[in-house]
Image 1: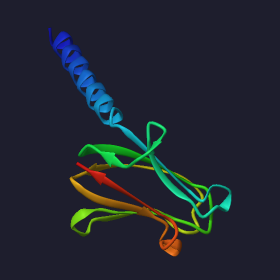
Image 2: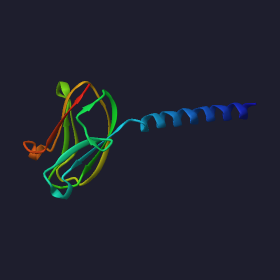
Image 3: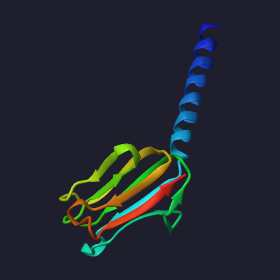
Image 4: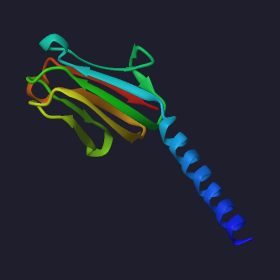
Length: 122
C-alpha cells in the first residue's frame, strides 16, 4: 500500500511538472535579428511578419545577434528596458518576458539613430 501511494504521488508530481513545462513552452515566439552580414539592420518579427502590434501577454524572445559590432536592446513603457546581447556577443539568446500595454522600441545601442523598430502592445 505504501509503495502504491508513493507511485501515485510520483506520477502526480511528474504530470504537474510536464504541465508546467508545456505551459512555459507555449508562449508566442518573437524573433529578433540584428546585424545579419554586418548590415545596419534590426528586426523583431512574429510568425514571420514584422511586429507592429501585439497583444499584451508573455512572449519568448529569440534574439539572433549576427555581428560583433551591434547589440540588441528593448525599451518599454514606464522606463522598463532589457539588454539581450552585448556589442561583442555573436550568437542566439532566448528570454521570456511579460509585455504590458504601451509602446516599445527594439534597437542597437551604438547605432540607435538608424537601427530601431517601434511596436505597440495593446
